[in-house]
Length: 160
Ligand code: UDP
Ligand code: MG
Image (spheres, rainbow, N blue to C red):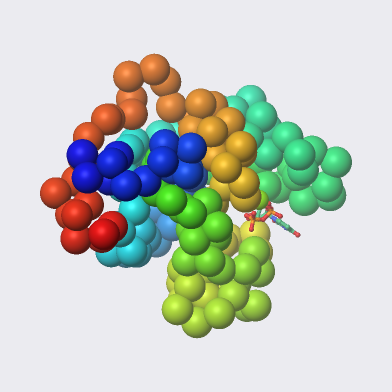
């Protein structure tokens, strides 16, 4: 309630964050979710999901002409992923910072990829690169009714 009074709705963004199959297989689900929780963003949607090739191709359609596209699709469909919708002011850019550079060897220590991965093709997590793509990707990965509208009791302790 307080959040709505202080923050204009237009400023509130959503980012689609996804723990990739390597993150799930390596037991990093709790660790990765925890980083976004601790930062103070609001979790609006969460599910474990095995995606189809069609969905993976649609998600990464901007990369369809890249040489690594077929192996990327194999990777993303190789096991279950954890799909998340996170909300907050500035969440898209902030999540990209928390995630770190695409190549984990270049990602700063302290970032998810910098701390937990070594190779671009196994970089454990996805984050939307713009608010528009955040909307697009959340609509792609979540069905109607899968997101929750709720207020966190932490909000007044996160936003003045
Ligand atoms: N990728 C890859 N090889 C490359 C570049 C990207 O396998 O040379 C994969 C990697 O999993 C990356 C994803 O394709 O996370 C999407 O690439 P993008 O450039 O959008 O990186 P991101 O936004 O995930 O940092
Ligand atoms: Mg990207």
